[in-house]
Each structure stands twice: as structure tokens, then as C-alpha cells.
Image (cartoon, rainbow, N blue to C red; front, side, top):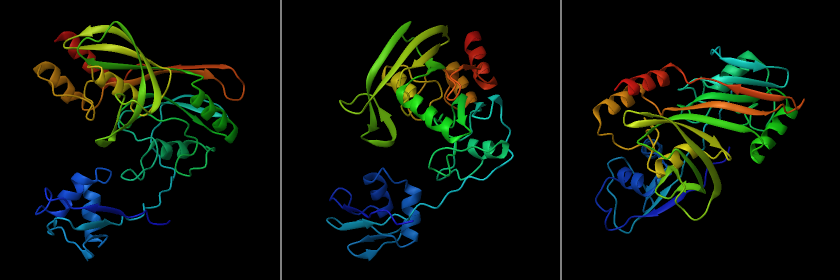
Length: 312
């Protein structure tokens, strides 16, 4: 695997005198600080033509060259991880993914994923990526709920097409801060956040279209239970739309905000994740055309958070 292209940064007067790893972590948000420190130890970062150490100070006007290490090769191997199977036939598999389970191997999560569990359970095919066999859509690690997986190339191709064309029904339940409108439709652009590569934003004037329909179901202590129906399925779409319209998902570590109310803060801490559950997925069977509909209730931790906020 070829190495990524080098990144070149010129040290400003403002950054001069600070440790080089701190400067680069600020100037290059696309790289984690731990990765930068690892590359320093590997001799992959130079300042003015000299290999740096972690104690090297940034020099005003100096050119710093970062040569990222090539990503480590990943593979997906079967692992005996429990699966909550909702439906299975020779073409597809529907599961209720628990919170905390990553969908497929990735840097930082090389195994113990949903894909590893599925490969242990059954043979799945489809797609060109060997670490994502059968995967046609994803849920965030800490989002629970219904997912469908293709078991054959034909099913994979058709399901990917259905997700791309939005020819299916998807709904999520979420506990959000405050009182959103009884109903709302958010129709925005969706793109990477300019200041944080881990985040997305709907506030720009370019990007892909993202549409979320919101319904407030129940008022809670300092929060509300809502249902979100998706017309599109962008990364973090619901979390972005709710947060940027003033009602972030309870417990969201990336898009959330500080909570002043003691009871609400306690529930958020006890939950330890965003209160988001993919409750409904409905579509036509990719091979037979038969109507398929899978609906699950939120898991116990979500239910406990609801109960606590009803009683507070």
C-alpha cells in the first residue's frame, strides 16, 4: 500500500516557540495528536529539513513536512459475537445492533465489530471492500437499532441502490434537550465542518441535501422524546439537524452542549452515549419484492433514561 502524500505546513510567528506536536495538532486537525506523536517517533516529520523530536520547538517561518504512515491493512475475520437477529433468509439478514458495537473494522477498531459477528454467523457477499462485506448502510457506534445486511451480491447491489435512491422508510427515536416544535422539517445542505473534520454541519451553502422530519412525541424533564423520519441518510444527519436547531441529542459527545440542570445531567452521565435508536426500517425485499418491515424498541439504557426523566 503506497504512503499518503506529504503535508507541508509553514510555522507562523504566533506558533513559534511552542512544541512542534502541539503546533501541528492545532494546524492539522485532520490528524490526531496521537498519530502526529507516533509519526514524530518514526522520523516522519521534519522541520527545515531536520527530523524533529517531541521536544522540538517550532521555528518561525520554518517549513514542516509531515509524511503520514500508510494505513495498516485491515481484514475482517469471523468472531463469536452475539447477534440479535430479527430476520434471515438466503439473501439478507436484519439485526438489532446494540449501542457500543462498531459496524465494520477501521483504524482504532480492527475487530470485535458487527461484520466480525456476521461473518461468524453466516457467509455474506457483496461490495468491493473486504472489510465491509454485505454492508449497505451504517449506524454510529453508540447508536442502537435496526440494520440490514446483504448475503448475496445481487441483494447487495439492489439494497445499495435503494439506499442511494431513498426507496425505503427509516425512523429513529431520540431524547433531545429542551422542547422542539411539535413537528418540523429540516431540509439543508450537509457537509464536513470547516473547523473540525470529525463533525458535519448543515449551516453551509454547499454540500449534499439532507432532509429530516421531526415529530415531538412526549415532553420530559428538561428534554423531549422525538421521532425522526429520514428522507436522506447522511452521516450524523439527525445529530447535526437537532443540535444546530437548538435541541441536541441527550448524551451526544460530539454535538451536545453543557447541561445545567442537575437531574438531566445525571441521566445523561448514566446513559453515557447519545440517546438515539434506529427504531424502524422498511423496504421491498431486494430479490422477491415482498414488503419487509422491522421495528424494535429502544434498549434498556435508553428506556431507563426515559423513566428517570419522566419521574424527575
